[in-house]
Image 1 (cartoon, rainbow, N blue to C red):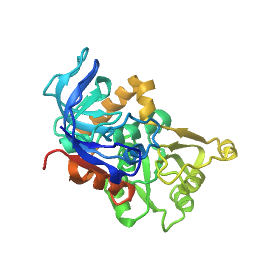
Image 2: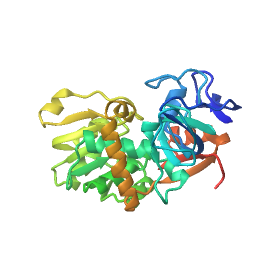
Image 3: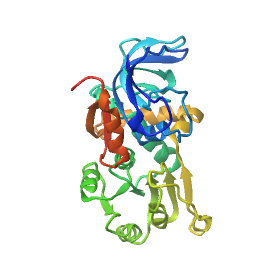
Image 4: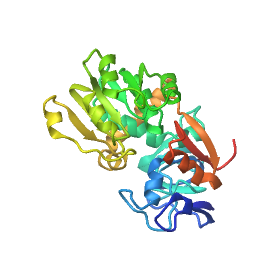
Length: 326
């Protein structure tokens, strides 16, 4: 099979395409003939050797995928060869075949394409886990979403609306804000040209946001924290802009909370809640309330270009590598 290979830690430009033996499913795993795999910012971090875990070299990046089950390991009961599935992966999605744990593999609902399914698991489940279980977002609360046109941020906009919140989308260009508006945002903030804190306070009649979904970090964190009202919760989902320092006194005086949310660890420690998150997401998809936004579709040979679209911040929504042309 063909696979994108990382042979040494470094830049994504060093990734190559090679013919390698297909993997075999172990007990509790399924083997998937890959149809589509979305790339994530974390792929570049993993290739650089700076991710939370380091796969054994050589390996194929790719943290999610969608395709057809071709074989099942011992003990697998939920799937059979021929089933259409999407999955969360430790790595390995940028290849023609991938193995996934049965517990982190999910049936693709009717009407969902392989490209949508390949772009679904990481972004939607990450956002749902953060908002439902960590942020405890309630109907009629105000949700501020940073990086609102990104692969994860855009799903937070949709999920916030599905949960009954008022959503303020924040991004850096009018074009990105238009995408967030189209996905249901009630109000928008351009943090490249507007003061984020002042704008959020104006939009909330000086009450502040109840929850902030932050996949950006960096310089925006301080303004986002100031945008929270009494009892507000800021969700740390990623650090594309850098890792912020949290002044504890600013949490105490307004009864605020800073909460981390990582799907990678959540799925190991709370599999029951993970399943409940997926069930709710699938129900919302069936009701037409979620619409995966795939803006770029590239072949396996262009995997480096696909990842670079994210690292250079030239894409909104999700970027998918498809094994077959549309």
